[in-house]
Amino acid sequence: RHLSRELIGVVSVRLTLLYSTVLFLAREAFRRACLSGGAKRNWTKTINLLWFTVPLGIFWSVFLGAVWLHLLEVPDPTVVPHYQAGVVAFGLSAVIELLGEPFWVLAQAHLFIRLKVIAESFSVLSKCVLTVILVILYPQWGLYIFSLAQLLYTSILVMCYVIYFMTFLGSPEATKKSFPVARMKALLPNLVEDEVGHTVYFLILQSFLGKVLKISERYVMTFLNVLNFGDQGVYDIINNLGSLVARFIFLPIEESFYVFFAKVLERGKNVKHQKQDDVATAASVLELLLKLVLLIGLTITVFGYAYSQLALDVYGGSMLSSGTGPSLLRCYSLYVLFLAVNGVTECFTFALMCKEEVDKYNFVMLALSFTFLCISYFLTHWHGSVGFILANCFNMGIRIAHSIHFIYDFFKESTCRPLSGLLPSPLLLLVYIISGAITVFSEVFFCCDKGWMARLIHISVGALCLAATIVTMFCTETKLIGFVRSQFLSQYMKKGT
Figure 1 (cartoon, rainbow, N blue to C red):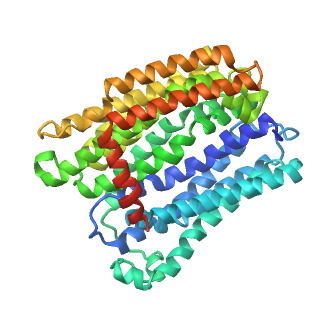
Figure 2 (cartoon, rainbow, N blue to C red):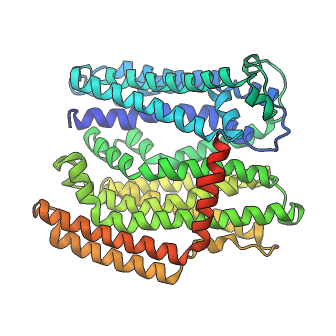
Figure 3 (cartoon, rainbow, N blue to C red):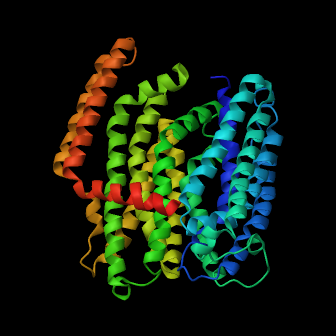
């Protein structure tokens, strides 16, 4: 409400793209390689390998920073001041975050979930508070505001991990748990040959292609100029609002259970050569995870359609609730369903693929990347920014199909059928359909230009439909409810401590 759409577009699309691209190119392959394998890995060599992300990050920051400054369109300095400082600050913040990579991987591998939640929450909160203060007091600073906030975010994030391990290593708790690292000195780089280095090389291409597919609409916006900075700002606001569930629910599930599947099953071995108890455990968890994310995605899709315009009007006023904003968020509600299923299926697939399968998948990803970029370009010319979301749905559909094919082939020689998790009960599907129809009619008659009393009626109708859906869910999906109670509310949080 206090900034121009152009400034928001440059920060949310252009500079955030620089920051996230540097991080993905520098660390994603290392993360996947170092989180695979059993508990008996050589942590000295693993930590040593992770420090290579820092010089890689410096290289990509300098290289891509030069591209962002000299090859891409530079915003009007009267509308978006201090663009050059923003590019430098966001590239530097990526390098700072890479300094904490060994600590992050060590914490993730040992399921320090609480540490991750606290560190990310505190750093994001600090970033938001500083941004709000500077926007209100010094709006003329332009990109200086977001540059300082971004540097604060990455610095606090790294410091949280460093401070935690400084107090944890050598403590009685670490000794009791037989923690593999005893001193902070062991977390410093030491040049020796690493056994997981070979795994990194064939994951680098996969990580890069995955990044292109994940946020390729930003690349199309940035390099092909299909939308102006103002439209990019509105699109990114809708994108951030629509992806809240994906970031706060789906992404933690994907990251945590990638580690789980990588530990329970051995990469590259078929189901007959795995321990059958581990196969049954992994299949049961995968089935219930698929059911969980599917129901969350369906709930958002069904209710998001009828409440997108109201949510945008409350959140951002007429700037968002008029024009293409509601259509964007409605389409994004459908896209969340694709994101939900793709996250779980791919986390299992990537945890089990052998080198040859990853190499084969890289060619599929390469073809899909090119196809997706073309579809994004043409759909954007046809249907504006909505075309990006439609193209993303197509992209996710292809990726889900590939992962489902892999999962089916993996389990076809066993009695386990985890893909049944993608089939909710018929009664629950009927309730979803009825709820969707009722809320759509409610939006037509009571929202959103008919006063606050009509809006309250519309909200009440949605609340009743949602309550009916949840009650039906508890009655028909008893196995899933038990899984959520036992795993997420007790054992999962217990491991996080």
